[in-house]
Length: 466
Image (cartoon, rainbow, N blue to C red; front, side, top):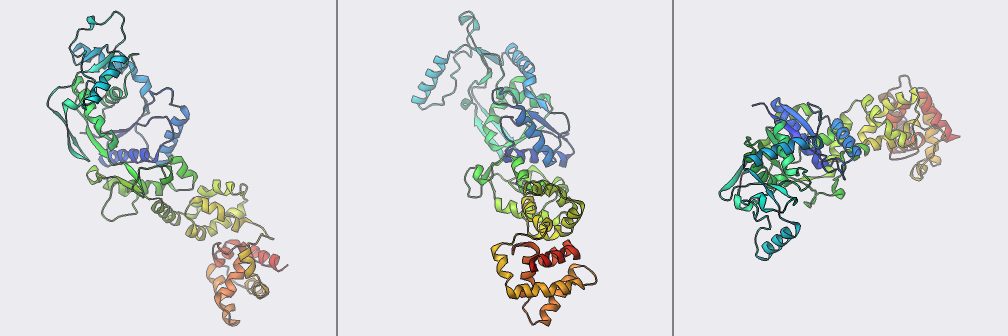
């Protein structure tokens, strides 16, 4: 059997990070098995669905590299097909028209509540002839569910789950205005799209028992279900914005690399031994639903930040430079000339070593782009005391005579000067760092001087002395 999965978001808001994890698991399972991964936009809620949300979903999935194999299916275009399936169920006696009024339904619920029973529909029109209803009376269409026995779901993740059929009422398929319900539309679309595995959050597990009734009434084979655990915050509480439950686009805007987000979400509820850093290729090779945990996973933003820092260090300088340019622009460095870009690329390993996000890189760009005279922070001013300025003056002469301008030769010159003057290394490095960057929390002085080149390094030193 060829595997077919789908991700089916509703375009009523941003693409939640939990939804991205669901899409990721569907995509990985499909790619592992060489199957087909589909996208369905469930836009039947016309009041809340927006084109902006659709665009955000498509953009977010594209950024994550979760490519779908066919054009997206928009559920709102399929209402006629949904009604066609219900018409067949009515003709076969698998569904029926219910003329219960809103007042009757409210009384039904209150009575059941008072008697401690399930407040579901009591089946009062299940065996009645529609001709008994007043002429032109509005009605809904309900599925005829079994009254005895049980429904069993052999869930790929959760295992065997069983519900007594007496707990499943005859729920609505078509509303009074003829519009299909979510429960009906999902089943018809999954069937028509050839979905073999429905992989989604375990908050949908209860829906599976109702959807099984629709599959049975339509005479279709039930797909395999895999209900993956929900994501909680690091404190174990339900995931919220304070835990990082934001749209995937916000992670991009904060300066996270897609590799870090991919890796972090992959490890939420799935594992491969003790491996923490897992590439996309390895994930495809290793992923299987059998390794998904049943319990809720926790989103730890500190771990995600650490992953991001790891991938920043691993990235090629040219790649980081390209990715960081919007963040540099936001920090006030929008128009960078070729020499400045070359300087940044030379300094990128030192910057990436200290950064946790692309936004950090954007903030540190100033150390390589600012022209003397530069602003010097208070802590750096302290390093430029009379003693510190003497070091700057001496080192300007020393560095002017360095033959090969490399990090190694620059460091050797500084160390040699410290030894000749019987100074601690910090007494040489700190005033030079202050003079070159204006800060003490900047990239290292030898790394900055190398990225600057001899001419710019000496200009900074002379500006401080002036």
